Length: 316
Image (spheres, rainbow, N blue to C red):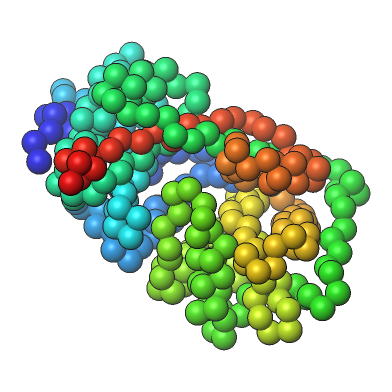
């Protein structure tokens, strides 16, 4: 691949500078959301990852050590797509950076011979949206970021499990295979979901911010019916929780298990004294949005997913 001279491949020696750039851009330095170098390494050493080949840095042409953009490509051949995870802070030359990243994304897609390329951007980001539209990308999805303030814990509802169901933390040693199947079945029809392997799930369970007791599973006798995967982060004075994923197996839907397990997950995070709980939801998923609204979640921002189709493959 040939790409703009202001772009360079990531090297592990760049880790500290990249992590600092990501934290500066998200305004997370000194907060409970600050990204650690260890978590960054975990993300980029997942099974199948090759950060030395699929991560790129945008630098200042006069100072190669000055970072003004970072992009990470994740290949998902099982669903014929690549996801581009980008971070570009607001700056006078942002349009040039987004243009270089966009061209790089299409080159990378051709080199991997996969049909779809997807990138997620803030809804209020004209530089990125204009760059993508002008290059032939199409907006295909909108997501909402929701937040629930936990300051008044007395208002949180209790959860009630239907008869014959129980809820308790995941037993990774005994239930990893069944849990992997549950997640894949729960999201099989969801847009953009790529099936996970047991190895991938195991790695995520033991990543920073994730804990076994934060993955609550609904069981019918010994059969897994649904789950809520929470994440937790803290610093010396603040803490925050996330509802990372919630799924119910197709055969168990319609029994209000989703509401029960989400509420149980919220109670788990509240017991850890989080200041807030956040999550992301597809704007078209009205039942989920109504559920989260009823539990006190409010929208704090929106994102858009854009898609580029490799027509060389599409026309075959």
